[in-house]
Amino acid sequence: MADDNFTERNRQEIIAIATRHFADKGFAGARVDEIAAATATSKRMIYYHFGSKDGLYRAVLTEAYRGFRSAELDTGLDALPAIDALARLTAHSFDFHFRHPELVRLVMDENMRRGPHVGAISEGRNEVVLPRTQALLDRGVAEGSFRAGIDAADLHMTISALAFYFVANRYTFGTIFGADMESDAAVAQRREQVIDTVLRYCRADR
Image (cartoon, rainbow, N blue to C red; front, side):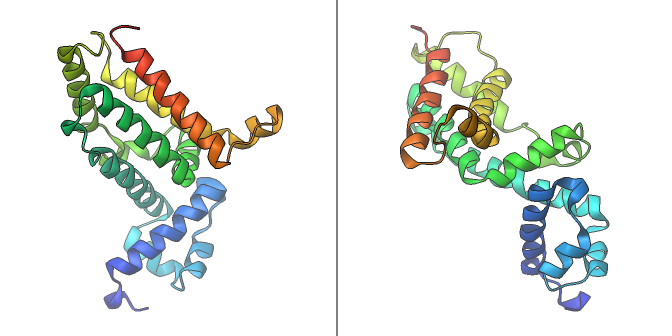
């Protein structure tokens, strides 16, 4: 594959394979030569187009967060009453984390290394998400369904934590407590518990 034939499809293929390597092995354990071999390209070409291993990793994080943010913003919340919109937003977060465990592993690794890369990617920030969440909260207060004084960042962290934990700790929790963390019934039950927990936290009549 020559440089002048490098396409967006080639780039996305490299990022997809690099995502699996970084998610499975962490930043320290992943090897660019192994990623190159898996993509039928060369290490030199990866460095040419991404600059470095750090550049490739930032591209992986960018795509991971972009997928999450795009889905987060495309949930049709404005057409629903606030209480139903919050339930949908919470369900979306739970479902996305469950369907994309690679994002969970990437975030865990980034936090273990004290976040050296996430600050360099705009998709990791919440300039759009948090104002929309705050607008949802304000609408809920105006409708009489939410109590006043809930901070959007705090709510976002609560939703993320509940969705994240179910994926990040599925193996240890399942082994220690003998719980089935991956059956359809277990996932559906936990999903409803998470939604109920978030709604109870926000309700005006709690």
